[in-house]
Image 1 (spheres, rainbow over the protein chains, first blue to last red):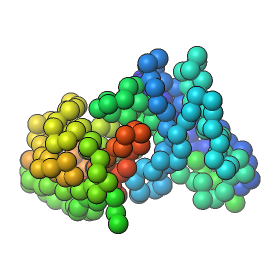
Image 2: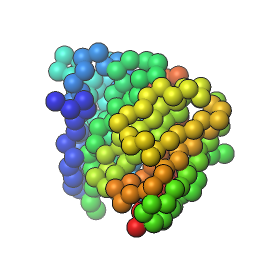
Image 3: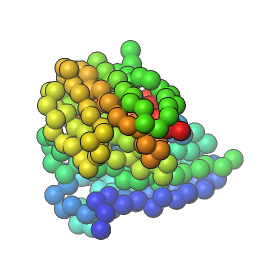
Image 4: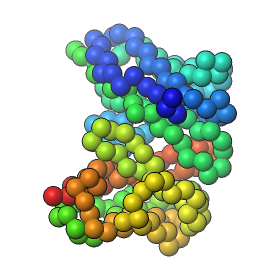
Length: 111
Length: 111
C-alpha cells in the first residue's frame, strides 16, 4: 500500500456543484495533515491544514478520520477558479521527517 | 518579497552537460528541500537539509549534488544530464508548523 493515495481524477463538475476528495494514508503514526493546491505550471501552495475535529474555511471543509486513516476535502459551490490539482500531504512525525505528498486529484470546474 | 526564489526558471540543455539550480529563502526557516515533479505530476522528495546539514537523501543518482552554503541557500548541481532528468525541480522550505513553502519551480528540459 502506498504511503498516501488519492484518486487522480479528473473530476469534471459544473459550477455550483459540491465535490469531495478523499485521501488515504498507510502510516497510523501520521500526525499532521494538509491539503495543497497546485495550478497548472505553478508551484503547490497550502490550501488548509486538517485538524482532528475537522475545520472549515469558507467553501472548503477538511476532515480527518484516524480510525479509517483518511482525510477528505469538500468544496461547496464550486467556482471556475477552483480548477486545479489538489494534493494531500501527510507528516509522520515532527522534526526533519519530510512531508509525503499524494499524487494529487485533478478538478475541472466547467461553466 | 519572494519567500522562496529559485533560478533559472527555465533551462534547456543538451545531454551530458552539467547545470546548477540556485535556491534562496528569506523566511528564516531551518529546513529546506529539493523536490522533483515529473511528467506524471508526482512530487517526490530528493533532498532535505536542516541548518546546512544533509538530513535526507532519497534514492537519487549521485550525479545530483546539493550544496547548502548557509541555511538560507540550497543549490542543486546536476552532472552529466540525461533525458530522464527532464522535470520540474522545486525548492522548498518548511516552518515550525510543517507548512511547506515552494519556489516557483525550475523547468529543466534535456535534449
